[in-house]
Image 1 (cartoon, rainbow over the protein chains, first blue to last red):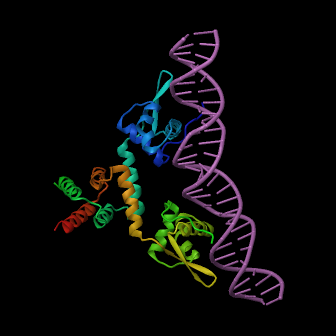
Image 2 (image 1 turned 180 degrees about the vertical axis):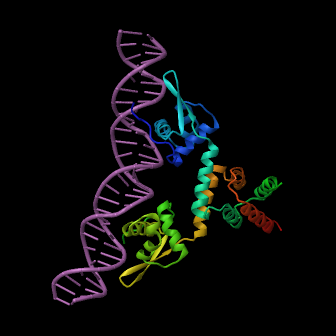
Image 3 (image 1 turned 90 degrees about the horizontal axis):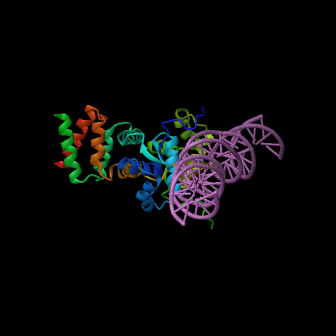
Length: 129
Length: 129
DNA sequence: GCGTTACGATTACATCTGTAAACTGAATTG
DNA sequence: CAATTCAGTTTACAGATGTAATCGTAACGC
């Protein structure tokens, strides 16, 4: 049998990520339905979405299920995992793998709203219990 | 006069970022000195470093100062700004622009050490006061 | 049944990135 | 002064990405 697909674990590009977000929000969807939900915002055409979907299938980040003559697409990876690995990459690259400096940076950059701060304190208290 | 340089504000790639880190740590440096500090780790050759440096100069992320027949390179942007914009990009892309969910995620993923947690609490207390 | 749709698959093509090698001109060395 | 060396500049080239157009084919309308 021919290996048609690429290896899993390849990086998901930013455009591909936009498609993933749509599928994480609701799935399964047809290509046309995905387009309905991003094409306008990103100024894409349907062919673009189809290309991105097939690349995602290649990367095994999206799975397909036949539905008559077309496919229904669903995420094949969890958003949590994606978010986790992306966050980790950033923290590793910019903050030596430590999350505290990231926070420190956000604080210094005043990138945290009061609401954020309260919520973070609450979170910490929770795990501190 | 011919515009030889590109516009500023273009994105810095990951390889370019590794060069920036070297220059943020110490500058000005010659191309060879930059290579001494990253080539082994990244398994690069000197030509690679030269290419990256000239791309960074193009992007106006690095500035040069002649020193005899060669150049001394220095960062033309602050690390804080770079870190800030990259962090913001991630937070925008993955957490709807809110920093708290990022923290929540790190907490849930148990990506925070006890030390991190203490430090974050201290930071929060500090800005809270 | 046959032309038209509606899909996915294949191909396209310009940029950006990673990674260098080749070229050029100035400086240094013998 | 000629040969070598050293630095920057130019060119290269494959793979990833953004963004489609085109092709082939199966279903559907008439």
